[in-house]
Image (cartoon, rainbow, N blue to C red; front, side):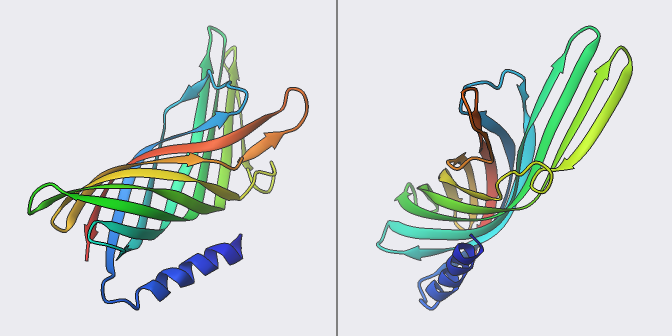
Amino acid sequence: MKKLLSFLVVAMFAITASAQVTWNLKGGLGISSCRYSDGGNEDGKTHFVGKIGAGLEYPLSSNFSLMPSAEFALKGAKWAFTEEYESYEDKLDIYYFQIPVLAAYRFNLTDRLNLVLKAGPYFAFGMAGSGKAKYEYNGESESQSLDIFKDLGAKRFEAGLDFGIDFEFQRFVVGAEYEFGLTPLAKEEGKDGFELKNSAFYVTVGYKF
């Protein structure tokens, strides 16, 4: 996985040998969750996350281009349940270094406004991840914190699909992106087993150089 990410980073810099390449910076805030393969997630709650990164755009034609990026992203999930005498809350915070490689098509709406549709794969490596659980019963509480990679055996590698839409106002960019994880963060074998996969939605702002 580290070799793959290193190769993609080197490839990004190699592409910049072309004078046609432009750079961009962006950041975003959003929400994320973890999808269960068995369909269960009835206690899932909104978990606020964010990401920041830099990328480049290499035009392949007047409207079609390739847009690889390097990003630091926070993902995860949150679950909560409350009854009269009992409640619990679980939260996952996972920090990734990831590289989306997106194909983009640009529609020129006006002289100053463009609409960009983009989609493609992303590859991510989990740098750190914490799991926090809090349980209360009859006024007494108990909490626990764990490293999800070291203590729970979660998978650091993630690959998925990234879909996005941007509005470009000259050099300023406002957009939205949805990341759909394809590889499991965790899995349990057996008849009642399941897989847990990431999903995240971000609203982003950026600037093109």
